[in-house]
Length: 220
Image (cartoon, rainbow, N blue to C red; front, side):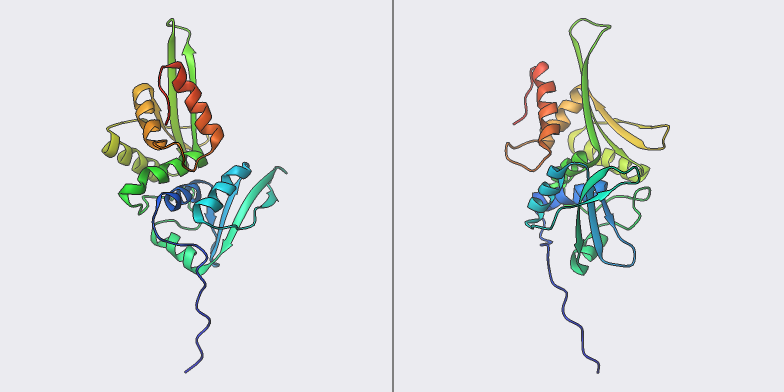
């Protein structure tokens, strides 16, 4: 019998917790699985995003830089590890996932930590005073994806857990957007930021907190 190769080293714990779920949300949006090699890549314009990713996984992977096709600098973390790569495959992530991403096997109790990662990756919020009505302040939160299946899964999960319907539209560029307005937006962000101390992008949380302050609400 031939000699077996060395046992793969575990670099990342696959034990479910809120931080792992958050990291999976980041990978579902800004991450990439290589084809033919067990390489996981997370790229972002925001260095804090990658610092959060490392903290979520309890790791200190090097944060490098790379140039985009337009010549812009981005930050990235790369993990070459068979065990973690296979774990991501087992929960539904795949190489070249942008238009084919579907539902992911996220434990129910960690779903909103995962969704907060999705929001930090490809989510947005905005608010404004409607000039048609005096003192009418509108607040929206949304998620973007190139995969209609993924967006519909998120919509179904949010409706199931919070009774918020949302609205799905498609942009001219072919991206799908799931948007929540007014009461539904407030209900959703309250669930995303249930605790004072949790991993998130501070700039996105601060923007939402300022909007809620105008309508008399607040985050934890």
